[in-house]
Image (tube, rainbow, N blue to C red; front, side, top):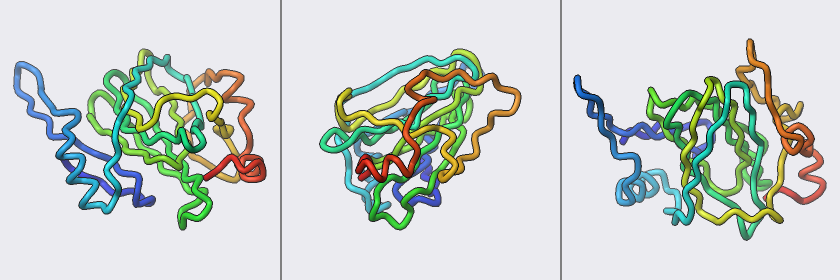
Length: 190
């Protein structure tokens, strides 16, 4: 597995080895020992995964920026198994040198990339094709009472979303999320 660092050291892009021929392809999407080795190399604590999620989104669906507060904070290992998406992680750890910074990467069924987002980050994505399917592992169970949302287009975060030629589709929860400054004032960050 190839590990690609990002500007936020704890957020990693992972490229699994894909073995392809005229019949199709094969890849190992997760191997606990390989992931433990990557964590050791990157000096990141090895997480335990407790839940797998699978979602489908139409082109233009924007979800996020979502996160859960401790003790239910979730790390996520994300991949797209069908379609394409722009995936974003925002550092919301107040004492981090990268607090308020974000990383964005295209994940697709074609590039097979995965994104590791540790706990302490808000997460969002924009589906770039119809029927985009996400599969992701989480390090904590979903807890509705600890879930928070920062609005996707927060001016202070200034995330570059590839929205050209897309009709955005958002839930009220996502379009009415808190601003980054409000989340800080409400102590809804780490």
